[in-house]
Length: 261
Image (cartoon, rainbow, N blue to C red):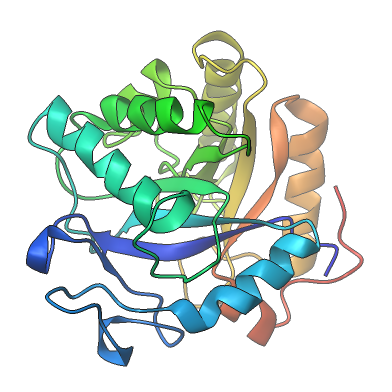
C-alpha cells in the first residue's frame, strides 16, 4: 500500500509492570492475555515478527508507541528515564529481550496523555545516545494534543531531538472539524515551533485525524484531503497525515490508494 509510510504499533501502555517490565496492548492483535514472558505481564508477540519484517522490506517504518489515553507512564528521576530507555532499546530495537522475536523496530513514538511530564527529555536523549552508536537509523516521534503547547510532552519537544510530530487534531476544541480559527491557530503555532524552537529544524508535522466516524473531529475522506492539501500549501513543515487508527481506517474505507501528498 503506497499510501502508508509509517506504522506506530500502539501501545506500550505501562512502563513498569510486573517484574519491573513494561506491558504492551495491541488490542485484538496481541496483549498480555495471548501469552506472556514468565514473571511479567509483558506479552509475547513474536508471531508478529514476520509481518513487521515484511512491512519493513517494503520500505515501511514500524515503531512502538508509548503511552495512550489510559497509559500508566512516567518517571520519578532522570536515572529512571535513562534506565527505561535502555529497557526499550533492549526489547524493541537492538537488545536481547524480544517481544517481537527477531523483528527490530525502527524507533519510538511518544503518545503521552497521562502521568507527569517530567524527564522525557532524559528518556529521548538516552535513547538517542544508544542509537548513535548503531549502524541503523532510528526515529523518535511524538503525538501531542493540538492545544499548543502540549501539557505532557511540550517541554521535551523543545529540549530533545524529534524526527516528526503527529499532532492529534481530534477530541479537542482545535480538532480538524472545528472552526478554522481554532485549527489554524494550532497549525501556525506548531509550524512556528518546528522552525524556531525544535532542535531539529527539519522536523515534520503530521495532521492527525480520526478514522472512526464516532470520534469527535472526524471528517469524510474528501474533506480530509482538502484540509491536508491546504495545510501543505500553507505550512512548509507539513509532513503528511496520521490516522487513528489503521484498523478503523481500512474497515471504514477511509484510506484510498489515490491519496498522495
